[in-house]
Length: 294
Image (cartoon, rainbow, N blue to C red; front, side):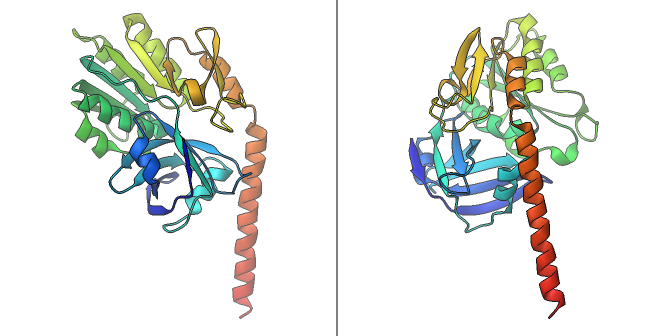
């Protein structure tokens, strides 16, 4: 585990609220494996730390790629940074890497921003010689990310949107069910996305006895298993996502309990975001007032 103060090398906006940052982090780029993540803070030692999966890495260039959605105060601040800005804290690689082997046919399912952490896993499974069927979904065409990258790494790519504005009008569970019903069903399913989506993907594969791996994104503080904030119940036992995961057997995860824990700080998160937006608005007003008097 390594701590660094990295610089943003490249910034792209993938959709209205989804951003891609390429960050200098040579030690992490060299050591990371598919499925692992980092913790970062932009407000110094005592700022909020958020987990982000390493979507890609270039060991030669010494950079890692982070893809995130602007949903709260910290991600809003992160989205406001530009090339040349630095992050106060970056720690990683964290978590257990994905177990990669050639099992034959695998189906990988990504929903929304979950397509980003799924990408390095698809890469690794394909490189191991598997036949990879990838299903990616979003609410609409504008929110679809990494389609070209996924197509390049997959033997089959199925694209779904909830509203039918692109690809198939379907939830990702429908083509997942169809793949499981094939004469040669997949040996492995990997699902990453919102908790409710992963829950129903696991329920879709359960009747077909397809081993299903999910990657959990819970509340984290220290990334060492000491704070207990990321605790989940798997197979009736307590596990810590930051050190035992982030990947678990989807048929064993207590998704309902996890989703309840994710709501624990919802009021504080909303208030922090409101304060951040009001602060930004006040700055805009002050700037306009200053320029108008000139």
